[in-house]
Amino acid sequence: MWYTSDQIHNAVYESRKLRVYLFVAIIFCLTASSRTAAAPPPNDNFNFPQVVSNLTGTITGSNIEATKESGEPNHAGNVGGHSVWYSWTPPPALPVGMSFSLRNAGTNFDTLIAVYTGTQLNSLTQIAANDDYGGSTTHLTSTVFFPAVSGTTYRIAVDGFGGDVGTFVLSWDLNRTAKQDNRFTGTGGSATTVFRPSTGTWWTTSTTGVQAFKFGTSGDVPSPADFDGDAITDYSVFRNGMWYVLNSDTNSVRVLSFGLPGDKPMPDDYNANGYDDFAVFRPSNGVWYSLDGHTSAFVSQQFGINLDKPAARDYDGDGRSDFTVFRPSTGVWYTLNSYDQTVSIVNWGTSEDIPVPGEFFVDGKADIGVWRPSNGTWYVRGPSGLVTILAFGLTGDIPQVLNYGVSTPSSDFAVYRPTTGTWYILDSLNNQFWAFHFGLAGDIPASTAYPIQQ
Image (cartoon, rainbow, N blue to C red; front, side, top):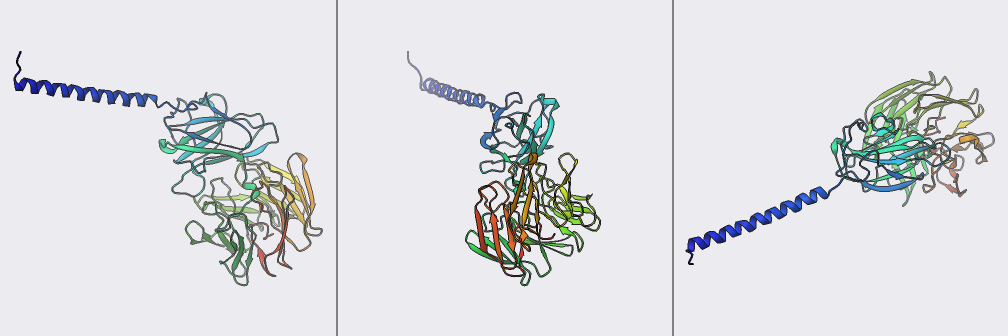
């Protein structure tokens, strides 16, 4: 049989079309197959959380292809939409302050995190939640703090703001905020620092030697804190009700009227959002005033009486500094716990004592402590009746509680001796001792804003 050229052309054309259709069909099937293969993470559902353990740890995860279940709450007040779940039960021990954080290298999306108790998804009790912790416009990650109770199982949800997805690194550890680090630009870690009123200059030890920075004038009260939330301490002074701050993230100066002459500056993070707040205690009326420099939220709280000494720190382990006063007339401490709004009353000290709170016992909470000028002795009250009494310092010294060791998770005993410009530091965990000259007569120790104003 003979075929015309047109018949042959049409047959070849149809054959090519058939092959193209077949190829397209194969690609479609492969694509559909790959879509089907992208299953949700194994801890997508509340009933199948990934179990983590110990007091410290790190784990990588992803919420890509994760879902939101019926009855699931909005985490940190946002609808989210792609949550994964973890379960953690603290080991038998003293109650501790804990933190779970996504603020780590390897987290690449806008996160949400929330902690709950309960066994039914639609009736959980929220313990803590956070959207953004600290200042960052490009890395909007989350951190929560809470006092953990032994034997209680906590469920941790990780989600994305507005349905965002990605990979993350989740870390958990004791709440380290109470041990008080400082990290001025260029110092790398907690630094011994003095403010020289005669020249308005800050002198700071650093990883490269010594750095000097002029910021302030005679009569200023040095009040360093992390006001811009970038985990770097900002140079700051309080001057008769005015704050002058050099923001480390933008290298710009902020001037704020907040307070009155005679107020005691007590900058700290009072709402656990990663930004230290402008705060003062007014001895004349026993009122605390705080202003969130990030959100402008204002708080006024009557808590204290005339001549009380402010001693705010995070005593309950929830990441928020608690309004606290030490009453020299009676030697009694009064703390308004931010976690549950209860008041703690502890008799610890005498009329001459200087309050020196810090995290000396490594339980994720601040400990009550006083330094007694007449005998240079520290008296620290820890959890469950633990007590430390240590002779360290001389009359006339100025205590400066800070975590100078950096690698150790506790506050250290430290004093500055104005008569000689000498620092004496004792690591509270391993007893390592340092003594060195850094300062001149008339200098003010400024490693921390507290308690030089006492």
